[in-house]
Length: 98
Image (cartoon, rainbow, N blue to C red; front, side, top):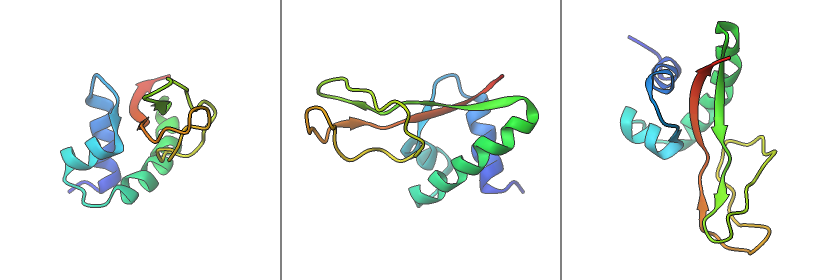
């Protein structure tokens, strides 16, 4: 039986398009998004040993298209600093070969 992190890693290696934390939770039937958020931090470090990389698409404001570049957090920001909109497209993740 695989651990939750192993299941998330396997999913992110096999997909063609990046997935959000919510999508990962739905696919793997994980009830708490916070668990996946914490796991992604550890997965990012552990896949480097295999010559792979966890790539994150940056969150973007749905109203003004502001990109939240340089964020280290895997959580979705709450508000756009440019237009103050709360319509934020969440970050999405995929594992690729380096």
